[in-house]
Amino acid sequence: MITSKIIANGILRSLVIVTTTLLLLYFIYQIQTVIIYIIIAIIFSLIANPVIEFLRRRLKFNNTLAVISTLILFVLLLIGLVSLFVPLITSQGNNLSLLDTNAVQSRLINLYGQLNIYLDKHNIDIEKVLKQADLTSKLKFNYLTNFFNSVIGTISSFGIGLVSVFFISFFILKDKVQFIVGVKKIFPDNHEDKIINSLGKIRNLLTRYFIGLIIQLTIICILYLIVLLIFGVENAFVIAFLCAILNIIPYVGHLIGSVLAGILTMLSNINNDFQSVTLPTTIYVMIGFFAVQLIDNNLASPIIFSKSVNSHPLEIFLVILIVGILFGIVGMIIAVPLYTILKVVGKEFFPDFKIVKALTRDI
Image (cartoon, rainbow, N blue to C red):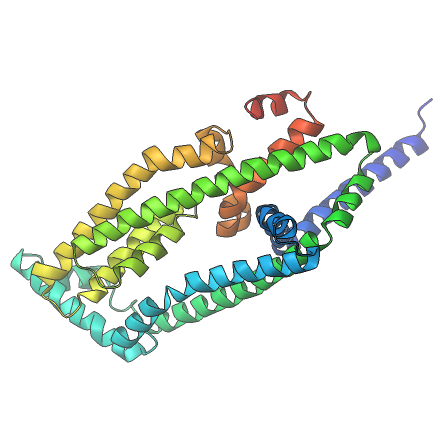
């Protein structure tokens, strides 16, 4: 017989479960940055593991030395990539005095004057348009200073995240045996084969994904470089490389790279005639970048995001969109590798679930 005491206990138990679940979700939300660091570290460890195994087996390094050497190799590679940006940063910084608000204002006024002359020739009264829109009262050049402060803050956060990822990765790689043993203890002994199979499939799929991604970025960089060289843009290689790297951000990276290329093209031609040189060159570069995007979107990206990880393009798009909303740009970058890991784990441990069967039928 159900009594009021049993009902009250059931309600109380339900409230405790709901409250605990909400607190847990809130806690996960608060430490989402740490969770992202751990996920990136695990993915990085899977990528770095073949290099470590090569150093151990072929060069006879002990495990710790192999891990340290591999991390140093990746750090040097990262430094090499960053050093490519120094000519661009130095050149643009010296020529445009980006940290000097007055200098920026002067150059923008110069650009505005050239634009005004160009529009006057086409019977467009820019002064009247701006006055009606009341934009001049809203335009404050100290926004530029705030923008660069925000950029510096972002770079600082990136540095902290990078150090954290490398630190976590070091111990995952160094103590991977203990790490695997610890994971096995969480699961029953009869799941050991599933764990080993999962790790093998994950390593294989992620290797295919990142190799394909490198090929994609290389092709995009070459095409961007050709466009920039055709129109004589300064620092063409660095701009092309930077815009190609931005394509790591799915769907949004293309747009950011094109806008960046257009701005840098316009600024590099600031001392030339606006109508005959600056504007046409910028438009041609933007059109060229748009053509490259069409090639990538219709040829490279479907192969990378679909064939390499055996997922449908719409499936990948929705995953990137959802993870991007939850975790921002960093989430968009790690969405495909993370989703791949979850699919493999789901297929090994929950093969009878209908949704898992539908999503993992090609794995």
